[in-house]
Image 1 (cartoon, helix red, strand yellow):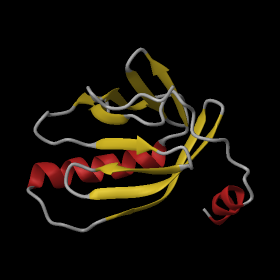
Image 2: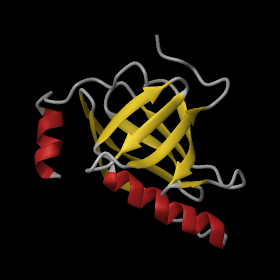
Image 3: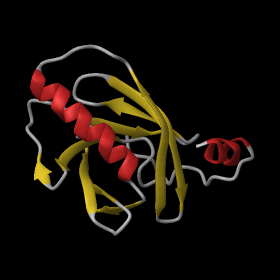
Length: 134
C-alpha cells in the first residue's frame, strides 16, 4: 500500500475514467448473489482518485487507482456504527470485495468489477438520477 500511495503522490495513476466518475454505483450482485434491496451499498469514484460510498451500514472511503482496465481499491477506512445483522453481513462482504478488485468494465449501465482470475466479484448499476460524467 505504501508503493500505491507513493505512485499517487507522484502522479503515477491515471485519472478516474469518465465512464465511472460522477456516478453513484449501487451494488446489485455481490459474491455471485443478487443483493437484497433493503440494504444499499454504493461506490462513488471521484476524478482525483478518491473513492467512497456506503457499505450497507457505514460510510467508507479509500483510494482507487485506474490503469486502463486495471483497478485497485486501497487504503479503505470506514465509520464504525453498529447495525442490524443483515447490514453488518453486507458490510463484511462489501469490504472483502473491495480488496479483491483487479479490473473493471462498463456494459451499458452496469459496472462490472472482476478479481485476479477475471471472476466477477461485483456488479453495480448507475443510480437513477445520478450525474453522468461527460
